[in-house]
Image (cartoon, rainbow, N blue to C red; front, side, top):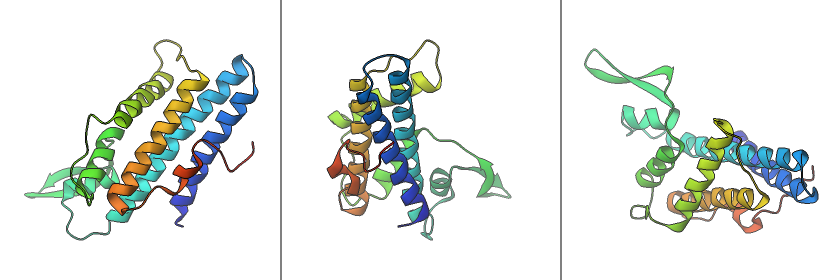
Length: 181
């Protein structure tokens, strides 16, 4: 297992571990802190998995500069009549990178953009954005974090099935963590 794959797996296990800790606490700021940690680490894990998948395809010789830009999150400039990748960071929306990977490297037809799991993922992303970019305090509950982590697992599973023709290895365990915090 590559280093980034192992780290992505670790982050997801930590997210599930913090959810388990939150379940042990009845109410209050401690529970809320565990829920916040679970949500943030869940999305860190997803991004680490996306970067690992992208890294798998960056070695392909037939990618356009724009495809390389999305995979490496580097800016494309037009220099001397040619598109070239720069070292400047170019951040793409998380959902755009997911859709790109699933469309460009899928062995199946295009994604059903109205699938239930994508709606659940959008809710999870909105909750993460409310926490990451707060305008008012983010309202998290044990149930909302469970749904968010399950949506992340489902997106990873769909990506693995579409791109690698196999299920995401951690999907079977659901929200049960392999670590104890």
